[in-house]
Length: 209
Ligand SMILES: C[S@@+](CC[C@H](N)C(=O)[O-])C[C@H]1O[C@@H](n2cnc3c(N)ncnc32)[C@H](O)[C@@H]1O
Image (cartoon, rainbow, N blue to C red):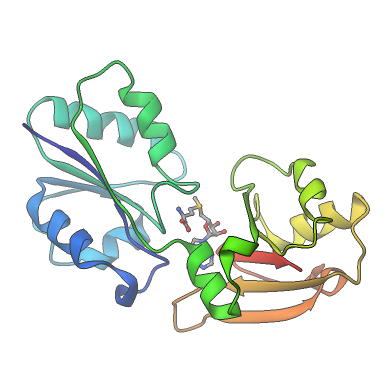
């Protein structure tokens, strides 16, 4: 029976790819992923489908169609597919269908940020706002004494402005973990107000202490 794999590719560098991810990708006919994820598998010989901001729905539907017609397909998901990744939309898409699905976990950006900051993540709260919009729910967590690890909606600057506007002290300690695992990785420990107006890539995990 053909299979659909959701493969976590880790934070970006080859070093954090699992042997299982490499083995699964070798075995499939079609590989679907963002340009940065596909780059990790330069020697893949099958069909490649590039996921961009505008074709996510159509590319995921195509992946499911191809599996239904007998092909093995892997969808690459940065970090871990189960955290703010492709698992949720795929589950929605294949509901009521007989699709053989396997999830291959990857190292999440949350895990590598925790490792860099030497932060036990069982004592932290983890929130994603990525692509969902800033949510006031986070404010309840920020006063419970635990660090909060946040994937921002769009940018670090927007998140800092949102938190300050909603009453979080501008002097609150934060860490911004940018481009984790890449050669130009940066870890900046500062305060919320100092983050305002600073330039960061979209690839950031923000920790509010
Ligand atoms: C669609 S979410 C995917 C999260 C992913 N499934 C995970 O487990 O890390 C994309 C967001 O994850 C975070 N992210 C992914 N890779 C990152 C990296 N290498 N460094 C810092 N943040 C990263 C950024 O906040 C980025 O905007």
